[in-house]
Image (cartoon, rainbow, N blue to C red; front, side):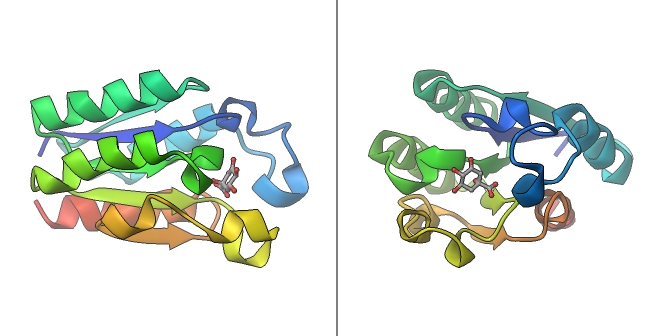
Length: 145
Ligand code: DQA
């Protein structure tokens, strides 16, 4: 694999200033640098963020069509978007990895965050470890080759 798609859902473009007590003070550019430096030689990180459900879904189609594994933080879509779940299922049904990640631990927060409609079709889920949730996902994905 030469590329890993790292997709981020709504409001994650505000990382750094959004609820720093929950999400920390680093922003998405910092995440990109962190992951790019952690990626093994020859693997590039394609990190994207959108507030738009349709755009996120189309990026998942792109992953299927190009055979690229996905690390995804679906943000609030995690909790209710069946459309996103169905698109994510296309990725894993195509035999590609899709790891659901969260910066915070949703299970330690409000009740509505305890449900993920994505987890059941994900290859795996990593939550609550800050940016290391993404990093561990990247380690796993790149170790599978
Ligand atoms: C989040 C957790 C979600 O509940 C929330 O809506 C987010 C971020 C996380 O990374 O901790 O936007 O996915």
